[in-house]
Image (cartoon, rainbow, N blue to C red; front, side, top):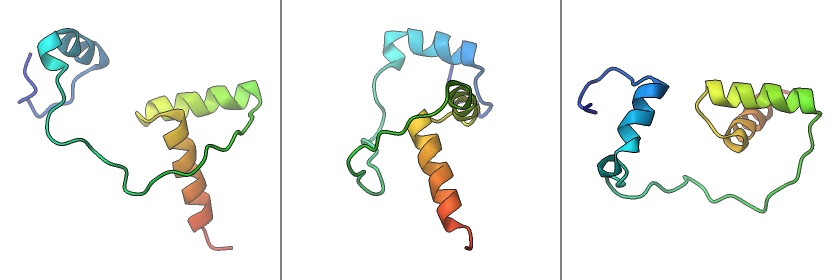
Length: 80
């Protein structure tokens, strides 16, 4: 399997591709955050809401933390 193809891989194809140790070497320079993150803030969610957040984050191919940060940034950018 080659990454030269411009079509996105399915999750199964990604799994097969990265199962090969040759495809586990980082490529290019390390990525850095645009801005450093501060101290973690503990936030509690009801279980059903947390499951919705997890599903939404997975659908956006983001971590739960990144998804929540984006949602907060979106809310803060709205006019008051």
